[in-house]
Amino acid sequence: MSFTTRVKNEISNEYSNKNANMAELAAILRNCYHQDTGLELITENSTICKHIYNLFKETYNINVKTEIRTTRTKNRLYGIVINDKLDIILKDLGVLDENNKYQLTIPDYLVESEDEKRAYLKGVFLVTGSINDPKTSMYHLEFKIDYLEESKYISLLLNEFYLNSKVISRDKGYMVYIKEAEKIGDFLRIIGASLAVMYFEDIRIYRDHKNMTNRLNNCEQANFEKSMLTSTKQVNDIKLIEETIGLDAMDTKIEEAARYRLKYPESSLEELSQIMSLETNHAITKSGLNHRFRKIKEIAERIRENQNKS
Image 1: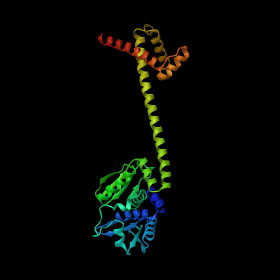
Image 2: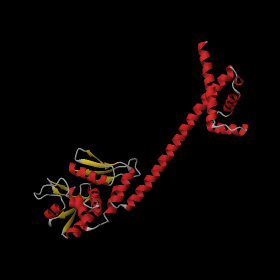
Image 3: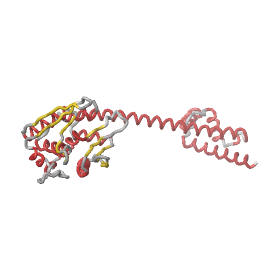
Image 4: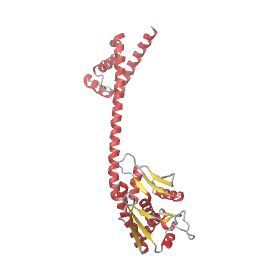
């Protein structure tokens, strides 16, 4: 079972007050009605079918029929058939206007309260939404919408809850989508998918922790490689000085740093400063030791310049 199906099954077992139920039905009908083919309430999910059936029965107390079809691939499709008061319902829920034309925008009275807005988003997700399992490599929530005005409204509604949704055009219709993991988790809370939220957040936290660990490991590796490269350059400078003018030609403190570097070539600057502080009984800071190695580098560069001239 896909994560999308798990979410839809969970929210299909939840019902609200009559106004919220009407908002949810409005979202379902507005995204299942087409001017050329009429109303098509067909789904592969029997739980969604049962949920919509109950919404109609409880909200409008009408006779609702269900039917089961089998596709060529032997998959089952579940349909809702409404003959009773359909014209009245479509107008009541803001799908059709008084001239039986599809209304491009939903009437405000259906989505006035926060509960009604949450219910509308729940209804849209049930019939047009999909969400990636957080175990996959990409966080993604989307709604496939037929009409531009509807897609803009859904995006606006999502963004009232600060979900940072966006709309793009597709070959057939439009897609409203959210990419941020935290925002997708917030959406699941908004539509009342509590179990899905716990699953989603557990996986997200695990992935974030894993990614952070990998970043730290990569950072440590990069720092180690940088430290080794610096140490190698310092050793090369010291050996050059030793072979030409001799280490004792340098200042005593600088000579001391040079000899410790040759003795501990793989130690980082911080580790070397700690070693020298312990072994000499004279505290030396990392910055102080770094200053000595800069002097060593300057001496080595002058030697190389003289060698190039001669």
